[in-house]
Length: 429
Ligand SMILES: Nc1ncnc2c1ncn2[C@@H]1O[C@H](COP(=O)(O)OP(=O)(O)O)[C@@H](O)[C@H]1O
Ligand SMILES: N[C@@H](CC(=O)OP(=O)(O)O)C(=O)O
Image (cartoon, rainbow, N blue to C red):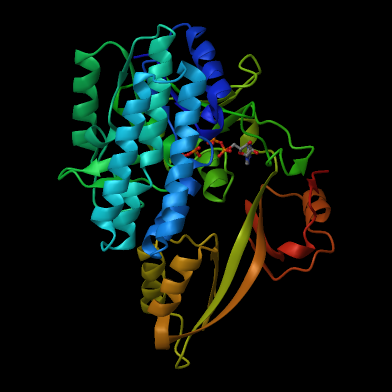
């Protein structure tokens, strides 16, 4: 089975980008079997803000944001097809469905309301992209991921029901030979409740398709030529990694290298499906390849930066040990709020962990920890993680910076640093 391609928000951010995507696809030999597409540009952030306005009873803000979303998508449709194109009516229908979903779920728990509304970005974008691909002569079949990706009901971080998902995907691919195009990030329970797979989860969706369709490979198209040993936007001298093992790619993405979602690798690894990260801006540039074998990327020191970290210093209130019971309880609360410990260090009577500063989830976590624990918080931190660090790299990056806390294993070292003491641009030696 030919490849699955994934295009993220950056690759479809406006009409020109969608035209470029069309040209790129017409040049691919052999053509891909399926496309997984994310929401346009920063639409998912806009939908989260829309949700906050809806839940905060800010009906003015909600209307304004919905109108902006409508303008963005209809504007791109007009730029691609001119006025009164049939796709405009499809977009209007989706926007009306989004508005209705907000009304229907406004009293539901936040994660349920989130999943029934925030995933509309992908429904809108794929409707536009599929129409454009049809327009330029690529016969596509638009598929609703809510009918293909079957999940459990862990809203905002849904787990996949693999057997049913694979059965539905293979049945579809057998009966329809056209290029399949579907949404990343979303799925639905067997009962039909809409779910999402976690922020930036479209890479994972693409890996699910590649796995279930037995694809020859998965290509993720990015605005960078491949995986680098640091974010080239923030770090001078970052260099591209040509080959990485699945295991190293998991480590780097799990520690926050934004280039691939960490859940992407396991479905590929289970069938030894190679992952290519390639540039949609420079498709001829040498890409990065990830597979079963170790490569240069498994040895080269790599630097991962994560801003907006909040350090929680948690101690049992009654001078108890931070034993297995306490650890299980605290980490259970973390998981329930969809928070991930990016840094974790345990001593006899304290647990220190750093989490992304998501105000709502952090507030709920502190409420849950309640009277049983004393918690001290430090905000405004940057987490620097080095994979395979050497002395020169440590000195070049950490040097004289004031360190809040640090820890190291044989392969990974981490420092929490005050963000305001960190340089605007970092430099590798
Ligand atoms: N290790 C890394 N290698 C390459 N790019 C990285 C890395 N870490 C962070 N990035 C950043 O990831 C960006 C692409 O991710 P993102 O903007 O989320 O794309 P998309 O919307 O297509 O998924 C790049 O522009 C780059 O700045
Ligand atoms: N649109 C979703 C899913 C996603 O993966 O997007 P992108 O591929 O643009 O990172 C998000 O922003 O979280």
